[in-house]
Image 1: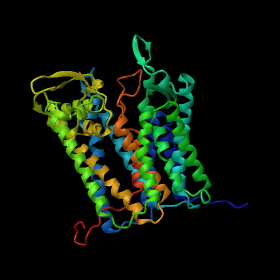
Image 2: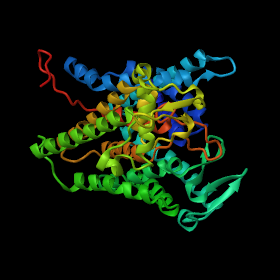
Image 3: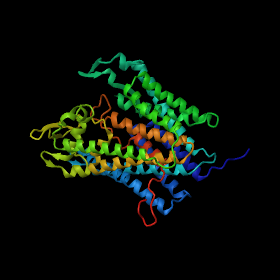
Image 4: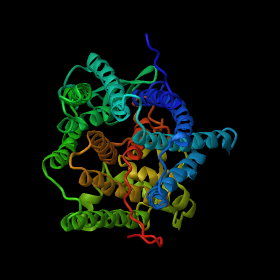
Length: 479
């Protein structure tokens, strides 16, 4: 009988995969995610220091340019004014600085840890040469198990297709009306929680979004990987159908379409001119729309004229308008502290004075503003610079994933899974994010970035998929 020796590098990889599995499953809730992120940071440091692969000098500069907006964003949303005032103790009349600093530090270290682990796993292989496959198998299996448990719990309490069968129907608890179709049950740490449908369905959506990877995984060469991707994606899709979540199912269409396009349409090494034009045109349109909204909402006008039906339609843009107004203006004066460092919330219960028009004001508590667009959560938590930094970083992801696809004759299935996961995450969180997902604890805030398992996994996969975007000349100029 031969003994198998396990190197330190292999041990670090397997422990990291276990921590990633705990994160994907949501083991222990927020505390469990925070503990896993602390462990990931320690593992990431050892893996990063022990890696043999070194970046060339030009590649380091390119990486620094790419990661700089993300670093600025993470620092601002972690240490911004939002979280310091969130830790305000009304009884003592002061901010709990220690708890604020520890929470912010843990979030920064967690993000850095997942970034380092993702980068190192993309370089190294274990003794079987299957590190990259194991990473995705671990994530998909953990998510699928969590979704399956959530599905069983929800069906046991509501039955299949309950959102259609009980549409418009409500029940009363504590003299409060609760619409049945707006909630579901999930395993939240070690308890069962009743949450909003948007919050509870994100795992299912991300799993279903990985189904197109089956087009790129060979059943003959990788039966285990193919089976795991098929079963886990099928569980996610089944959950969305049995609820059902019509909007989430519609959002799968663009994700599937892009995957099919990549699979069956060959692209050259050089980016065609039409693709550059379309890409820059889309970015310009988004930038114009965003600055239009900020310019109008910051003044409290909220009147877009003929475009009001688009930019002020209630569910999406009304909370955006309120947050922009609260960040940029304090009564009638510019609120520079909030603009640069995030909104002042004082635990969410001090009224915000929103300028609803050029001559009128109203007061609303922060907990009554429920954003559904996570990009503006960055504006709220970290200020305008954090918002711009996030948008720049998100814009850089398209050419990065595009570089993978155009430089390889056969698309790497693991990179594709990363791409659809990241795309699915941004798409879902841009339209269906909810700040207060707990039905019976309406004031409990859940951040899109702080101690958020899905954000950590997205960071992991982004840095796992990193490929140089910027080519630098010898003199230091950008080519």
